[in-house]
Image 1 (cartoon, rainbow, N blue to C red):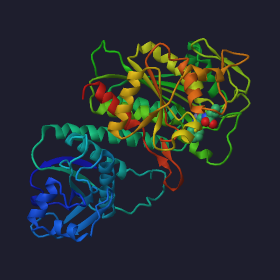
Image 2 (cartoon, rainbow, N blue to C red; image 1 turned 90 degrees about the vertical axis):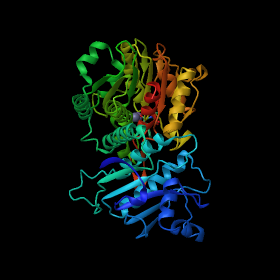
Image 3 (tube, rainbow, N blue to C red; image 1 turned 135 degrees about the vertical axis):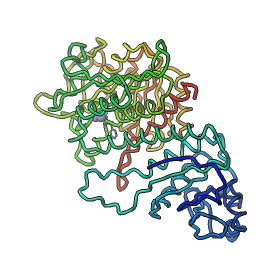
Length: 494
Ligand code: BES
Ligand code: MN
Ligand code: ZN
């Protein structure tokens, strides 16, 4: 898909389709008004007749309007208010992109930047529209012997502007970078676990490093043994796939600037280990590397947009499998921090690999550490598929990440990491147990991690409910790449 920016009068642009935003109350965006004037009020006439309810996401295709050079005009509904909310704008653009793709068009000009959106500017609209365009065009079809989708692929997307704007170009570049980062994360998530192994993730990181000149290092089992990562390694013991600890360093900021470190859970398949999961929907545990995918996607976005900030990605990658060498419930292991852990349930493996990766992150002298993990089913029960769970040991950082989530519309909801919950992790045989029982399962998981993050400002994002969709629409969402990228952009002063 090719993107460009076109400044000029919409009625004069010769293209397959021009898309503009309209409100039900016959309030038109500036470009819709220009088209309406050119075609002698046909558009406002249709709205007055009540033929189009203009709900966000709904569309109406019009053909051969006199006075307009484009063959088609697509009206995109924006609701009734006269100003769209961030969510309405996104729904509207998604609906518009779907209609355009269903119509089998080659190219489209989106005149969306002039839509009034509450608390957002023109750059935000262009960024979101580019992201949504890339996200709706994404298909996972590389493993189908014949592409089932007969539709033509949309080739060119132009962003129409009523007048020249200097910042539109950089907004577009950023939107493309994020959209491609999101799709990269989705592709990794959707790949089957026999392809997307820890080694495959390491290879992807290396490839990213070659494209964007990142420093990439991959630690093997022997290196991890030397570092004393007994907790991480205990998860890989039952697997034939070798574990990898992947780090990617992006230096966009001044040399002395402390980096933001992103740590992503990379369990490429989670059977539960000896504490085996039930069979139903176990295939979805291929998505248990979505935290890792979001780190790779974010690193790719940040590098592509040349963000002036230092960012490090750390990915502990492993499978969680049962075999004769697998860790048993009751085993006690020693983490890199020196703290000992009684493994009472081998299915609580995410925290076991993250704790060593978090300790390892200390060496980067981080300004802040954010870990991203499909950590607990309990988080899905608490927050469903709308918000990711946020846990933090620093209020300011928690606010910063939450605000980025609202801005990017990739929202989180904060949960407590109070000491009162730590009691649930008591063990008779080691410094701590790896599970805290049924009550507040996502909180005790965060409390476990908190024991390894005392030396830096830290946020933990539990994305168990938001990283993928189940059912007929089964597929990775690429969340929280938009949130993470927005957070880093704001940090960089963008
Ligand atoms: N990867 C799972 C969490 C998960 C489960 C995410 C279902 C999304 C959907 C994690 O490794 C896990 O198995 N967690 C256990 C922890 C429990 C044993 C304390 C869980 O949530 O059941
Ligand atoms: Mn598990
Ligand atoms: Zn897991």
